[in-house]
Image (cartoon, rainbow, N blue to C red; front, side):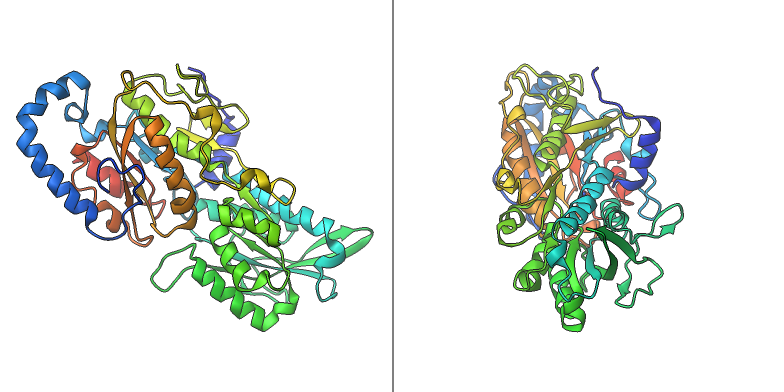
Length: 453
């Protein structure tokens, strides 16, 4: 089987820093914290019970989920890699739950490095106007998504590494928020420096915090908007750059303050609104190739359900001609993980990324339903309000599920509690496969315990 393997050294490095309805609802949004999915499941169960005798013969012929124990069904973790939120160590028990278990995400380290480099390059190219108050200090503020999320940790480290403001902690760059640091005294960061045209400038992280709301939801855009309001009223003239762990928070800060004050803001995810805002002064963002990730999330399940080589339609062309090239993803066999590669989106190329929900053309061809018959998939989004997952990732999934002949039930969580999602996986027996996006990366066992029953 053709697979792209990374070295053992890279595997360890990536592992330490990765983390990111009713039936037939292809265009149906993920349900939120209500009871819709539970009520539908109850109805389905009643119908299933009445039709058991009639369906048994059909199940024997089409290899449906009636023949397969839940613990043996295909499972894909996506966007949040099962791992220890404190150390980043991968949860290999979850990643190898059964022979058809995989993770789909993106290369967090590569993306973090790109974001940091993008910010540094912008400063150097615009040094004549970036220091707004002329004090010789390039001051930036940082919106941190979730202090326990591997992707957020990597992005914070990427910014600090590129700008020289990082300090070492336990063998890596400290990713802790600093609160307010206008005097440069915070222990979690240091003052960096940058030299352009023979002149040296100090680079300082003026403030950073986890954007967590009072209900406990992280990556919270409203909290980020409030934060920039507080920071700007206290030391706004010192803020020259805004960096954010994602576009949701970045756009909230951009719309609340930085757009009107001509302060470039840099995010992550290449959401459509952020890409469009580059024309209005948004500094840039990173595309994590959500189109490739969404395809991989469902394609891995499709291959496992069909009993074909897992690389089919991924690194090896399928009968329809779907295939991904080496420059858009890597597969790490040790981690049982597929990682999409990232692309910087700036004023030079943003027009190529204006539609974030457009499927990736090389994998856009319809599968033959006689060879890949319809199957049911349970898939959840950890937070129905998450900007990237709900506005970009889920619409992409909904575009791909038809192509791959998958009937997907989309379940939306509240972004705070795992039980808000797991409580709606009450009858896994009615599904053929599962795609899981946890609230917290530590909580894989909450889901595997249900499948083990």
